[in-house]
Length: 316
Image 1 (tube, helix red, strand yellow):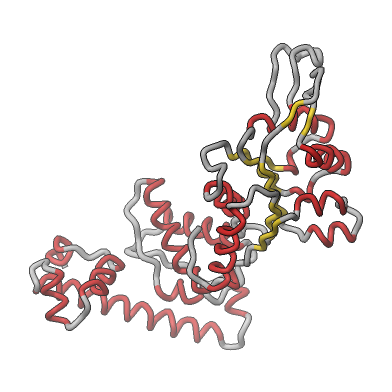
Image 2 (spheres, rainbow, N blue to C red):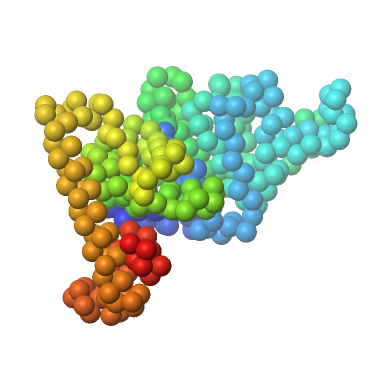
């Protein structure tokens, strides 16, 4: 969970409060806002942290096999049942069962889940007795379940069972302060994953990032950074703004070009200045800070941003 915006801090504080109570939780938010990450945060910050976290995509549960998927089966329950097979509920015993896209459950699946949530008792297919589970239920939906209830697509009684505690995750367009932070995190993540040296993100690119609406939210940003990082040939990640952003304001193309040119000029000046400075100080960051009248920690961040080391300064 990464962020510093007010919208993020409010949601994160609520997750903290919710995590300590062993009650069902409904997480709502647009596609790509990080609902599974929030569910994992609730689990791993709570009393069940040492137990299993079992995610399941409800949209992928076949209607005819819903009971077998959730509750498993015993040997001999049907022709091919040669061994006992635990269901998702058993796999999550004493832990958390995360029901992603819960709004995709069919009417039959909703009834099955509702019956289980009533007392957490279930009977595996072919089983002779009821068994009792001990799992925390966290559900997530990218559609407002209340509207699904009003449309007759989701059971009201199941909705209330799931929504004992509730979190709404803000879309990325409401977290402008977090965009650069997240983008840099995804660069670091991609660098480690693909074993490629990290690159700074062009300031002009970051500028339009903060104006873009991000309909795909964090997932869209993550995939964009990953792709552009892998394909980048220069000394930074530079991404052209999408046509929809340029066309949104008359004359925006010229404004963006000016801003990008200015950002690049500043970045080039900083890079050359820092290289000369650290070279003059013979690689001593403290001395360089004194010479330039800059606070040492801030200078260190600038050097890291432009990937300038003593060796590179000598080459430049």
